Amino acid sequence: MQPRLLAHLMGRLVFLLGLCMLIPLAFAAATGDPTARAFGVSAASVIAVGFAMGRIPLDGELEARTAIAVVTLGWAAAGVVGALPFWLSGIFPHWTDALFESVSGFTTTGATVMANIAAQPRALLLWRSLLQWLGGMGIIVLFVSVFPRLGIGSVQLFRAEVPGPAPEKLLPRVAESGQLLWVIYLALTAAAAALLLLTGLDWFDAVNHALTAVATGGYSTRDTSVAAFANPMAEWVLVLFMFLGGTNFVLQYRLFRLGDWRAVAADREFWTYTGLLLAASVFIMADLHLKTGAGIWESLRLGVFHAVSVMTTAGFTTASYDLWPPLSQAVLFVLMWVGGSAGSTSGGPKVIRLLVLVKHGIKELNRLLHSRAVQVLRIGDRPVSERVFAAVAGFVFLYLTVWFASVLVLAGLGLDLVTAASAAIASLGTIGPGFGAIGPGHTYAALPPPAKLYLAFLMIVGRLEVLIVLVLFHPAFWEWRLRRRV
Image 1: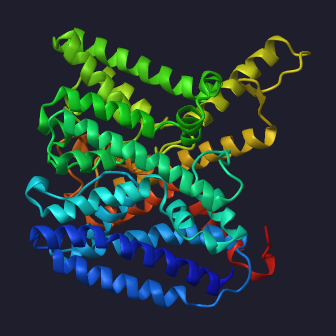
Image 2 (image 1 turned 90 degrees about the horizontal axis):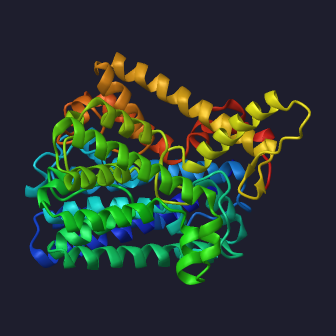
């Protein structure tokens, strides 16, 4: 471990987050928002601390274990920093609630403990949305793109942060890759805001929902989420940008910047992702139409919106799906276990891992039928090595283990089984709303403080895809004599 380098990088990250606070501070000052003082104190304190830490001398090139520590502790620090305006404003009298709201934002989970959202100071609502937007592509990637002088060692941050089993490099240098990702991200956000304005939303609602839709975060400016607008056109716009947020950003670069349609046509993960969403939408539409008597158009709109919202882990809602027929609820619960594409802003296990597991299962069946045939695991035209499959299998095992353990922990803290099971997967998969006491129209406010703290930890575990956080609990990680450069 490199304590000075760790402190230096953490300082730069904290400094950047302090600068981001200047956005809601300026908004609060311009509009006479009562939270201006809270943002001013928070920004000044955070910038000062970050500046001081950033002046700590470096102690060598970035090592793998230090990179992992920076990523994990960076998310924890972001949660603490982001909570300061909530706490100092007095909207949350308890630090636990402020921390929960902040971590839920940075991890793009969208679970909230905020009551009467529409009546809260607008600067705080903007900060919530900005938290999700910053967390959407990863605050570490933003960190790298803004501070490119970190040097070649920053590649470890990029590898640790970008989701998926094998993220592709856009450009040779990490800083350039991060900048390019954020250009795409900004363009999608601006397009989403413009289209939402055209559907009739006011500028504040349009901007906030654009920020959280592209980030697949799900924070809304209204208590009943998107349902409050009763605006089908806005819902379809959000469906489009949630879908794009859940799509591999490298693929989007190839399509929108290079015009490479062949890359899209050959991408098995994209078509599996699209096919699963279409199938889930049809199942829900048919179930709602046949069992509730809802019209075809309404059933289609509800089915598509919630299938996309849940699978991309955005978490927006337009209806109380916990009151839907059991089949529709089951489809949504299954989608919680899938997630979006690798290299997207979505949480969850990711479609590519599902593809690898399914392909391996088919390979094993074929091996039983044709024992002498040489079976090669492929995704499209690309062979999948045993090492990659082992990594996928290990991830899925740990993901399930963490979920099972979390259900037991939450049940032990007093949650009923439905709420415990759905809260665990909704937090681990960074989805937000679940079933039971945390379903649509409900918040996490009634949960006991220990449960909120545990779920906040679970959000970070899920956002960083389990392994990066769990490795910190391995004794060998902290042994100085095992230090290794990468």
